[in-house]
Length: 318
Image (cartoon, rainbow, N blue to C red):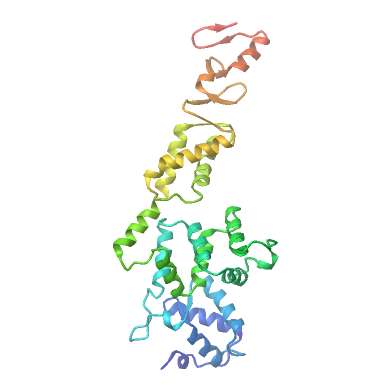
């Protein structure tokens, strides 16, 4: 008995049909054949099959993690059950992202560069991200692609979400071709391992920003930070994200450059807070004082101007 014959029920409205097909996809290894959708829709859905129905079903499947593919991309065994790795290359890219072997922003951008600009625009419209007609860049031949990149940089969209949705949007044949073009296929396992190793040794595009977020509690009330703290937080970030420690010096230099550009002093000295004015300063700019623990030159002069004596660790300053 075929799948069509199994579902022998009265006509379903569109919403019920979509819900049923998503469940069928989950039962069949998270994959639906286009031919099955067409046959089932013509047989059991009110109004029959249409491109509008297919588009709405694709949106529901995307949210549920169900792939829609054509018959040629499917791998069916003799019992008509789907292998768990029907989307072999798609799953491989998922694994590479999950293991931090490739940067999601790089993958999303590369997938869009692989697709035609019309396809990227259709993807944006189909997923309700934006309509290319609303972008006022008439001389930009890659308006949709560049608008996605801008939204990544501004934190409006998550590159990993877009990369995954792009993989859903593309056929498995296209994903396979993409992997081949970027040498991410596994026809030669040794070559693939070399590519993965090479990719792991690249810093993610948001690495500096992520380290600055980790550092933020240390510098939120001051414009100074100890260089050892920077080094420790860079090392912490690399370990948390399984990134090669060989990149530590490079990332640390970039973080320091960013801090300096933001008028934050990076010093090798210990950093302490003046007990009187509460400003954070390098140890060499401070003195030990009986009442305030640490005190800076301007505060010492202010106390002197008021006629007060300042007792330091070894002597008095009149």
